[in-house]
Amino acid sequence: MSVGYMDPGNWGTDIAAGSSSHYTLLWAVLLSSLIAMFLQNLCARLGLAGDIDLAQACHLRYSKSGSVVLWVFAQVAIIACDLAEVIGSAVALQLLLGIPLIWGVVITAFDVLLLIGLMQFGFRKLEAVVTVLVLMVSGCFLLEIFKSQPDWGSVIPALFTPKISNLGEAALAVGILGATVMPHNLYLHSALVQTRKVDNLEEALKMNAWDTYLSLVIAFFVNAAILVVAAATFYAHGHRDVNDLGQAQDLLRPLLGGAAATIFAVGLLASGQSSTITGTLAGQVVMKGLLGLKWKPWVQRVVTRGCAIVPAAVAVIIYGGHNTIGLLVASQIVLSMQLPFAVFPLLKFTADPKIMGIHANGLVTRITGGIVGWLIVFLNAYLIWDSLGDFWLIVLGLVGVGFAVFLEKSAHIEKSVSLAA
Image (cartoon, rainbow, N blue to C red):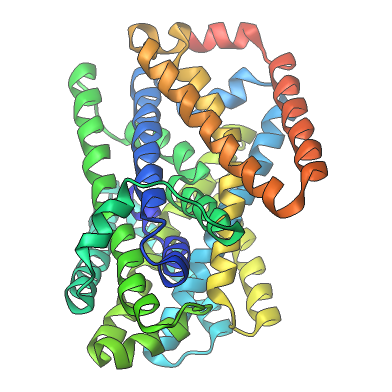
């Protein structure tokens, strides 16, 4: 799951944050990582103790129309995430091999399907490929940190000092939240834990919790490293308006040397390739679970991939490959806006003894979950208010409340009971 938290979308938000605000927004990376650990652990518990993934639970609990709307929200999140991953991979191919962006987008449409084809040899083989890619990303930024020599005396305090000074920082903080937590990864994790054979549920819950924490700690250090490198190189040398991934590499070359620029591109390619796999798998999970479709897996993957490739190609054509970091940040803000529609159902299901039995959330977990859920809502609301004003905040707030009421009114109580059985 950690690959979803170090994808090109994270690169875009972290580079933008580090280059424009120095180390100021490191707290957002830490907070988002802690939220991700909490929610992903709940996903694992739902999949193991509830024996059902989040998408399937929503399909059984809510009406058909409610499930379709939730699928639309999840699909928007997947498209936004895949947009970042496809553009990131295409930019990396351009930086390394000189391939035009539009052809890079086309190449990424097929390579992920080839990688997922490894699943026919077993899910462990796919995990092994992803692990190699994650290690490549981690190794690249260990080298970048070593070369950039950041001011650690400023880095550590910034982790524990929440601060937003302007609209730009508010947008970046929300973008970091969306890039780190990502709603479709919640659906995916609750399904992936069921690929394991479980003989002892208690042991499985314990080991999955440690697996989740360890994986996301690694992802946190990679995300923090991206921001720190951007702050120590771009901000420290007066480059505070880095709008393009290619520009970022060009700036790294004279500051840290040609090897660092190449390492940057290799890490970006590994990041894009590993995260596109999880995005495509997530699309399959939400399509099958929320809509109840019985399509063949390869058809679901092709449809999901196609939904992302078209917007990516359009974006490349319109922008001509410029302002890629701006596109990545915007896509991650979209992800953040979708989070409540996955988080609140997850909190509801994992707190239900009819589904979870003795493993239902306790009082402390329910309170923590409530704080996390409403904190996400508050951060999104603050950005809407700060950028669009009171009117649109009220309008969008009413729409959100209306949809929540609609879901609850359309809920199938009898299905919830049968689900528990």
